Image 1 (cartoon, one colour):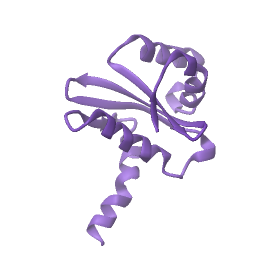
Image 2: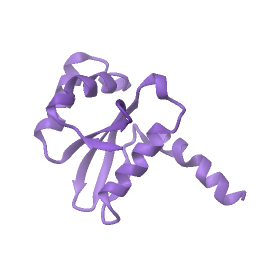
Image 3: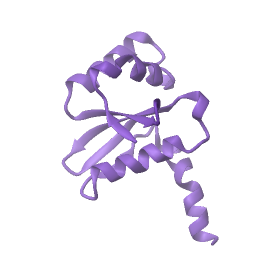
Length: 125
């Protein structure tokens, strides 16, 4: 289940975001968290499964009808289990049909990989 970021989740969110290659440096990571806290067009969500927070996904609202996924990260212990895809699908559902969800260039290959299997099933039933 997706939950909206709040300050009490800061350390968990920073830990998950630190797995993103562009966020390895602490100074950049702090700037990113500050952006999600201070800028209303940047929104961060955490993926909670039972008691544990397994992942984080961050978007930038680029217009009233478009959001761009800027960050996505899953705890390494839970990778290859579909957590990232579930986060993307839940976020799309949360945003509704009126807001188009697109990946940033950095996220594009991961995004495509998540939905590659679905496309194969559609073309080869």
